[in-house]
Image (cartoon, rainbow, N blue to C red; front, top):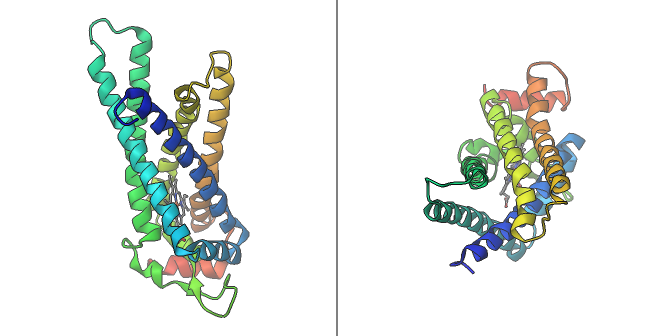
Length: 244
Ligand code: HEM
């Protein structure tokens, strides 16, 4: 499976399907921040306190999918370059080479985004003070829980960081717009007559993901620059004060 090109294509498509599903679930979970502090905190706490084998099992599974997806993509690009004689390239092969190069570039930037994002909000080495944000809001008993709501509000107070997230989400959008349709091609499920519909559905999905993720940093920036007031004002000023 790992050694043949076809095996690598399947593996890239199957791990791609897992990641396509993950981004949707993560985006839908994040949108609870728009419902308020209690909602997102309770949701994040429920995830963080899942039984350890489930929590770590899914984290490791996700990590393996990301690594396999990136490795198979890289190996296929290298194989295609070696197999292609430069002089007599036909137009279609050239275009395919260009789009896989674009996928390689957006994919590599997304990989760096994921590392940054984990250090920012999960491991919290970039701003260790986020780990100390505790609250009773969203807790099901009387014990304090991590205040993910305030962490995200504080995290996006930095205009540069918010803009970086929005640009990364746009790159994710372009990666998905091509990738979702390619999955069907790799699995041998894309006929030429279906292709336009699949391409359209893939673009629609990609834009939903872009808007669903970007709305959070956009709403924080809009409140920071006093365009709209979306989040609870006291918590918002506290998050702003955390970085001043
Ligand atoms: C505006 C966009 C995003 C926001 C606001 C956001 C928010 C968060 C937050 C708050 C956490 C930590 C949750 C906790 O402490 O329990 C988290 C974890 C994570 N995020 Fe995101 N995220 C965004 C985009 C993304 C994207 C695009 C990806 C992947 C392509 C991603 C992948 C992850 C992963 C892998 C984790 C670690 C999950 C774990 O703890 O096992 N995030 N995100």
